[in-house]
Every structure is written in structure tokens, then in C-alpha cells.
Image 1 (cartoon, rainbow, N blue to C red):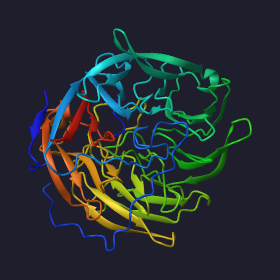
Image 2 (image 1 turned 90 degrees about the vertical axis):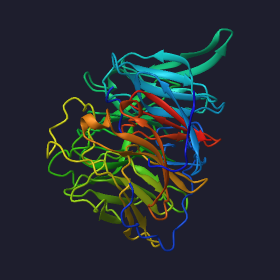
Image 3 (image 1 turned 120 degrees about the horizontal axis):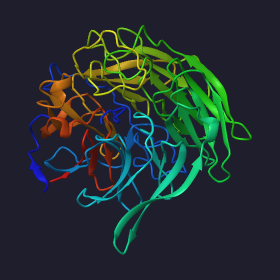
Length: 481
């Protein structure tokens, strides 16, 4: 049953892991550049904003749809006993989510009722690595594309039958020995020619032609722990040592156009899942939405935002420290990137319940989770960057920018934020942030403890402004009251 929430009050990535009041107001941007354009629509995916965890194949972190806004909201929770990092929406309005069950850590696809959020159907997939398969996407036929534990690239469709809704695998393409034994797929995205690009935790980058079954791959020898991104003619992959920009050769074999090493820091930071960048590469720009590509490095004590010209080379147009309102900072979250602006979330000290197998010890072993966001703008000439504002909003989710209503949506957290606190007494709030200033516009209390912990996952807005937020134990549906 939905609960009504007042319009006041205070309010990742990776989330297959088991499974403010503001002080002084941030300085306003003057003038505030417009956000957008939206990244180009990938012809092989569902509509932008609802096709991937990060909205689109460019990983912009934006949506063309409005969010619930700043007035009163209502919410309901769908309990799935699973962490649900990927929430996408089909052209028919039905919500598809890829979750990992708490008990058994089995990847499972769920179909949710868009009117109520109720679980209509589910399909368990063969189990692989705990952290493999976090990233999936919805194709242009409303099928969820994911790699299962047997290293088959599968497309899962949803259908209404006489007895109700059902989910079934409609296509399966084996990746064969392109994925070495013991390795697992991390990132997955299609290009404009319909080939599906993938990257493995062991550093293999490849393409799959699901029409012919052809698989072509290369090895970087460097680990990959985040998703990958595509725009017309270009694919970006961030390893734990460098950012790669690639294209496909005539037979589909990946070709490295350029490689840009970055500062991976002295060690893994607390609040990150690997030693290296925690960000998925994001394409953005004020013209085509593809002029620039960006990541955040792992430098100490603060990570640097690195922005490159996508059609340029390995020399960044800017390298600027971010989240400097704290003594130390870092991020495991993909950025929001739109127009000339990039928004970075601080996850330093965020206590994930589990780490990828083989993750090195962090230095220090733990830290307080301070939260906070920064906005950085590329200058009009495209030759440098500057920090516009730093905000203390403590985001427990990966924020998303609505290009329809000009607001940033997230889930913020108050109360104890240590490992035990996040799952017991921490309080979670639906929060709306002004992208021009970084100020929190409003927040609405959702609940307490692990059932509302969003584990730095990103919410997805539907065309009617309803927001679906994955949590450690299911999905929360937030809409206007």
C-alpha cells in the first residue's frame, strides 16, 4: 500500500554486493549554462533515459523525463529479497529490473507493474561472479540484454499470456573462449552497427555479432570494474590503469584509437570497489552530446576530473581536483555529464557490504562517509575546466539529472553511516537538488535501514515522472502525490 509523504522533511556501483541540512549555501553558477543536448539515441537500445543503468549508451546520467518534482510524493516498496542495480523501462511502460538475490546470489530478471510496482514475473539466470552482470541494457525490442553465468549473451523478453505475464530467453549467443576461464563480463553496450561490445574484469574487450555469432576480442592486460559506453563510431572503456577509446575494425575486432593513462593513486580508497577509477566513462558535449569523454581518476587525497576530446588524443583538456570540500575524497559513481557540465558524487568511506573477489585492501582500512557533490564546467572554448560549486548533500544513491524539469534526483542519507548504521538506523530520503547551485530543494522521508539502502545505485524515471530506485532488498517506486 502506498504511503503519502510530506513535501518537506530531510531526505550506485554497484549493487550486486549483497546481496543536510546544508551549511553555507554553495555559490550559484553565474551564468548557468544550459544542460543538454541529450546523448544521441542508440538505434540498438530502448529510448534514452530508460535503456541502461546510466540512462543511455553514452552513460550521461541524464533523462529526458521529469522526476517527481519538489511537491509532496508517495511511495511504495517492492520487496524482492535482492539488490537491484539495473532498472529499465520498455516502450510499453513495463519496468524490467536485473537483481541479485540475497540468498544464493542468483541473477534474476523481474518484470514490474508500472501502475503499482508489483512483481509480475521473474526469471533466474545461471549464476556467475557476484559482481559480473551488474550492467545490462534494454534493446530496441524491449528485451533485456545480459551475459549469464555460462558466458552466454542472452536477450530476455516479456510477454502476456492467458495465465499472466512471463519472461523468457529469446536469443542466446555463446561468447566461447573469448572470455577466459575464471573471468567474467563487467560492461556491456551496443554500437550503432548493432554489434554488442563487452569488457571483462580481466581486461578483455570484445564485440559480439548476435546475428552471425562472431566474437572478436583483444586483451589489455588491465582490470575493468565499471561499465562501458558507446556513441556513433566510438567506444570508451576505463581500466584500472587507463582510459581507452576504441572503434571496430572491418571484422568487428576492437581497435585502440588512443590510450590515456591516469593517476590510479597509491591504493584502493575506502568507498571504492577497485584500485583505480570508480567511474564509467561518460560522453557529453554542448553540440552533439559526444564531443567530450570523461572519468575521475583515483589520485590522493582527491580524485581529478579528466576531460578529453573524443576525436582528439590521450591528452586531457583539463585535469582538476574535485570534491575538495573534504580532506580526502573519491568516487565509485559514474558522473552526470551534460552540455558543458559534469557532476561528481563523493563515495569516500561508503561501506559496501561486499567487495569483488581479489579486491586489494583499502588505505586507510575505513573512513567516515561524508558524501557531497561537485559541479565542474568545461569552458566555452573547450580548453579548460572550473569548479562551479561544492555541495555537502550526502547522497547514498547515484544521482540523475532530468533534462525535462532541470532537477537532480537522488536518495540522501542521515544518521549513522558506518557499515552497521547504513543497514540499521540510517534514514533515507528522496531528495531533489538544484543543479545551478547545489542546494537541496526538498527531501521526503522514505524509511530506515537496509530495506531502503540504495547502495549507490541510480534511479530511473518513467515518462510520467515516476522514479524507480533500486535498493539492497528490492525497488522503491516514488511518484507525485
